[in-house]
Length: 291
Length: 258
Image (cartoon, rainbow over all chains, first blue to last red; front, side, top):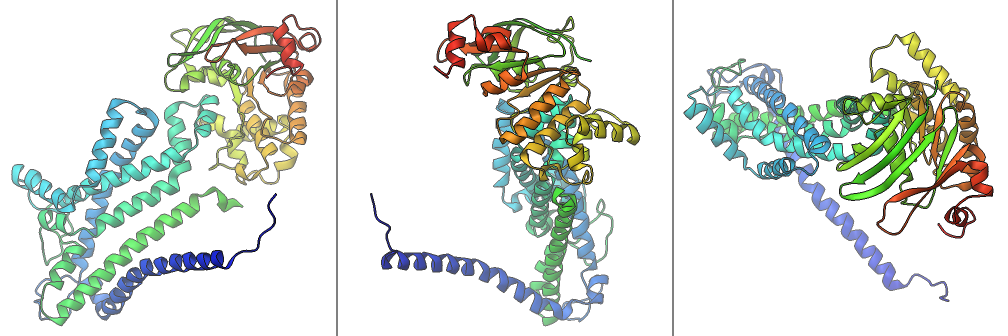
C-alpha cells in the first residue's frame, strides 16, 4: 500500500513550466491576429467613409483623392453569391451521398479521393483553368460569372468536407428512430439529419465563403479588372475587393494606399458580418433556445 | 387493434455471417412476449427483422417469412416503410430528436408522413402522451426541447412518439436497460396498460422483468462462438420460469450461465 504523497517541488515546477508554455503559445498565436486587425483598422479608417462605400474609381487617377470601392464591393458580393449558389448545393448533395448512400462503395471512395485532391488545388490554378476553359476555349468574355466559377472550384471541396464531417456526427440512433416511425429515407435526411447538423454545416459553409471572398489570383484571371461600376455579373469585366486592394496597394501615392487599407477593412467587415449572420441563424435554430 | 405475428424458418445475416437461424414462432395479439438470452445470441437482430429494420444496416439481409395477420412482410412487393408504420419500435437508449420540442417529437411520425390538421395532431399528441403516462409531467412545457427531460421521461417520450402513429405492434429493445428502477417500474406499468391495444414484444436482459411483465417468453441461445442464435424454448412465462422443458433454459434462468 502506498502512502499519500505531497506534491514534490519538481512536479510543481513542471506544472508551472508547462502551464506557462501553453499560455505563451496562445499569446504567439493571437499576436499576429490582433496585429493584423489593429493595422487594418488603424490604417483603413482614414478613408472608410460614405464616399468610399458609394463611389467607384471611374475617372480617378492614382494621385487623386476621393474615389471608392463601390464597384469592388458590388463585384465581390455578386461573385461570392454566385459561387455559393453553385458550390453549396453541389457540395451539400455530395456530402449527403457520401454519408447516407455511398458508404463504402467504390464511387464514394473515388469521390472522397478527388475532393481531397481538390482541397489542395492552389487558387491560381483554378483561375488558370477557368481562363483556359471558359474564356480561351469557349471564347466567353471576362465576367463575374467566370470569377464565380473559379471561386466555386475552391469552395466546393471545403463545403463537402465540412458538411460530410457534420453529417457523420449525427447519431445513427436518430436515423433509426425516424425509420422506425415509417419515415422514408429521403425525408429522414431532409427533416431529421440536416436540421440536426444545420449549425455545423452553416459554420463550415461560412468558413468556405470567408476563404474564397479573399481570393485574388483567380479573380485577376477571370473577372479581369475595371474602374467602373458593372452590376451585371454575366457580362463584361467586374471588380472584386481583393483585386481592388491589390491594385491600389501597388500604386505609389498615399491616397491610393489609404484606399487599399480601407478596401481591406471593408473585406474583413463583410466576412465578419457573414459570420455573424451564420451565428445568429445557428442560435435561432438551436433547440437550447427554448430553455 | 393488434394483430398476430407468425414467423417461419427465419434466418438473418450480417454480410456472410449468419446471426440467427431457423426461427419459427407465433406471437398472439394483445399479449406481451419477452425475449431473453445471453448477449449476442440474436434477440435484438430477430426483433429488428420483425419490422424490417434489420436491412437498414449495410450488408444485412433476411431469409424466411414473417406474416402479420396472414400477409408476408418480406414479399417482394411490400414497401418496408409501410411495415414500419404498422410495427413501431422503442430503442435501448432514449433517442428523442434533439432539434424538436416535446410536442414536435410526439407529432414527428405524423408530420413527417403527411399533412394533418393542427387539431388532429394536437389531439393525438395529448392522447399519446397520456398513453405513455407522461402528459401530467410535460403538459405545461410542450414547447421545450425533448432532450431536456430526464432519461426515464425521454424513454416514455419515445414510447409516446412510437404509439402516436398508431401501430399494430410495438417492439421494445431493452427499453429499460438505461433507466433507474423507478423509471423502469413506470415503463413496466405502462406496458401492462398498452397491452390491451398493441401486441408488445420486449427484449430484456432482466429476467425478473420478463417474469413480471410478459405472458410468453422465448429463450434464445447460440451453440457456440460464431454460431447463429436459435430459439431454444418458447412457452408461457410462468412455465418457463418454473418448469422449463430444456436443461439450457433452466441453467440460464437459475443463473448457472450467461
